Image (cartoon, rainbow, N blue to C red; front, side):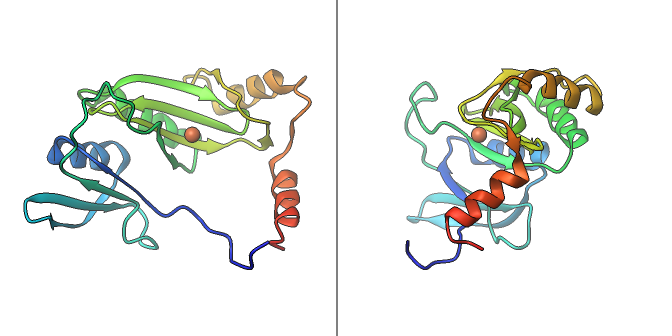
Length: 182
Ligand SMILES: [Fe+2]
């Protein structure tokens, strides 16, 4: 094993058709701040966005997207949120935002997620952890309008016969040991 510290993903960069629309989408729906904006290759625009001062940028949007939004672009980018209440806030903001499509809520066993396709057809996810590790892929729709407790109980019931379920903290500790990170 190489002797390097664990990496965390810092940012993603992708091209957009309409810079002002996409910056507005990420700022309005997810609360991103515009950190820097400038030009590249003389005529193209670039915008750096972040929600966390520990990363100068978490998203970099480049103008100059060329392929149609029907073409396979990338599958999704995903944001970690801090509570089910926050997921509901994002869900409502997505429903209000013009051009957002295919909003759905999926439990992956290890995460409760809200997906959408942004106004340019890119798939975006925001999620919170569940307390469980579950082997992937796993995905079942869930009802975000239920209470936190109802969602927890419904998910626990859904997973009760899944033999891959272990407490997420246990799974994390095992991986840290296996990967030499302790
Ligand atoms: Fe994901």
